[in-house]
Length: 229
Image (cartoon, rainbow, N blue to C red; front, side):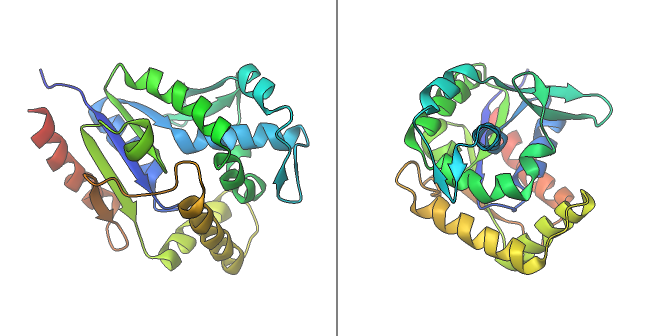
């Protein structure tokens, strides 16, 4: 029997990390954990409680909120995919909204938020057989992961992909707005004090600017075979 491993996927926003990670998990029969969705869920909860105003996060009640909220993933047979739950309710559409996207990097930069979510992620990872994507999975959450991948793509291609995704969900937004959001998120992700976005020294770089999903899958499957046989 092939051994199971931890696959850590990091990279810039709108590189298709989640789509890629979900496809790997489905193909291998692994559990997919969307770390970005976890941060988005915390952001959504803070927005709902009115604790993010004018780009500033009120952290006075943060500790209690982190103890109270429950973030999980449930399988939706109709979509044949995992969806994010917040306190038992599916919030997959809400956490993908522009409002959450515009604030998630601010929330993710808060050390206590990262500490708490990393604790939860590591507990899941002890069982192996998981795929997780985010910004600091290979550098902070799972520095000993057997397979680390750092994804990147041309910024304009990323913006076009993100715009298409939002339009398909009926969200009206311009390419310029999406590009601005991506540039701002890139800057915050790479310059925050807590776990900035970095390529792990032993991570494999996957530039998917001109690659199809199938081509990406062929690439990763070759590496998984090498590591698990």
